[in-house]
Amino acid sequence: MIMQNYQVLEEISIYLIDEEHTSLLAQQLAPLLLAPGEQGGAGGRIHLKGELGAGKTHFVRALLRACGVAGRIKSPSYALLETYKVSNLYFYHLDFYRFSDPREWVDAGFRDLLQKQAVVLIEWPEQAGSLLPPPDLEISLDYAGAGRLARLTAYSNKGKSWLTSMVLPPQEFPPRDSPAAES
Image (cartoon, rainbow, N blue to C red; front, side, top):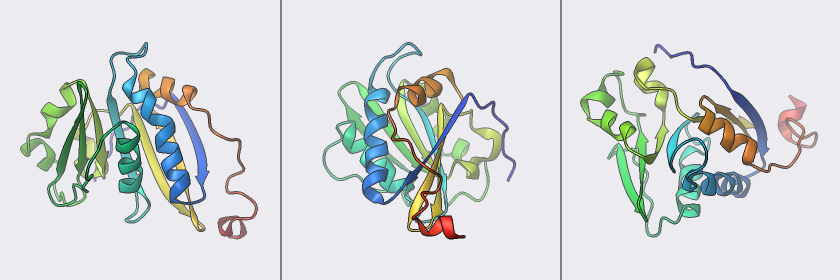
């Protein structure tokens, strides 16, 4: 799969001990997505990467809940797209895991979603190859012992402002007492 090289503006890493800490990270980001901010209106594009079971969908569910989405939040693994609306803002949760050709996301008509002022959350963006524009923020979740190492990378000024606005606890990577530190 051909991947686009985007310019990194800011990057931080944080060790997430468990699902609760993954949810807390999502809760930190949620109000930033809802605020108009200096870098344009509310909304933005977030790509989520990581192996199966690394916590991508859990993160998205926690983020959507923190943004005010009520009711059932389904994984778009089979439907490819789940849509939500809070106030005037649309949330599009896409999952490209099942794509075998990068052009499938274009053929499905998803390109139009990227033009709107909305929150666009894409799991498995690498399945679209170099056809996707750069996200505001990419979140990579990697197994690290019992927890996850989250790497948040900003590719736009909006994404950079989100990272610099988040208040994250200081950490070691991985913490000394985690099983990942022993490997």
